[in-house]
Image 1 (tube, rainbow, N blue to C red):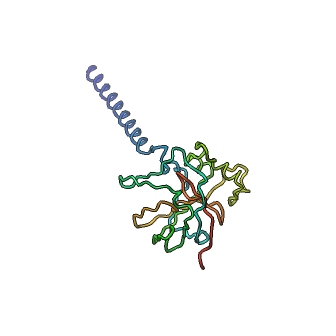
Image 2: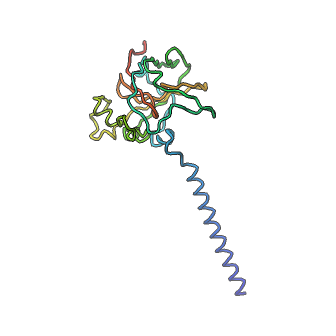
Image 3: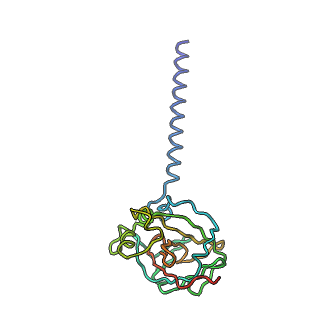
Length: 214
């Protein structure tokens, strides 16, 4: 009888140990599943407030000019991959272009893309800085330096003692159609007439040319 009791206790201990191993494995798998490449721009903005669809942004609508590259990510490559295919392009090829935003379409140069959906979120200067790794890029300023030394006026700037905590409006434009749109669908709005185009890579400063017709 003593032997049977001992064996039963050993079985229970083994089952308990096995359960702990299974739980640990599940926790490890979940951790791996949620971890993403730190160089991915999608991963970099995990702290951004969850976006809401179909935000009415009539004050943003209008025509803007793509003026010059002012920021650049660390380890930037002109090429992108879409559906397994490498598509070479350089956003600097679009300097001087107009982009137009409206409720009915988005326009890049002469090309129009219908039925845009505007998703608005917020990101702090520090989050934008870290996401794009702009501080680590030789020859280009950090976001802090760009704003402070460039005399850039950002909405609500005077309300924050530390510029890194300043919230920026982040606008992403998406479509039902699977368009390839190289520039203009990711924007950081600085004020009514100035914005940055892009979250990662080469960042273009854009200025408003005209408001949307009422």
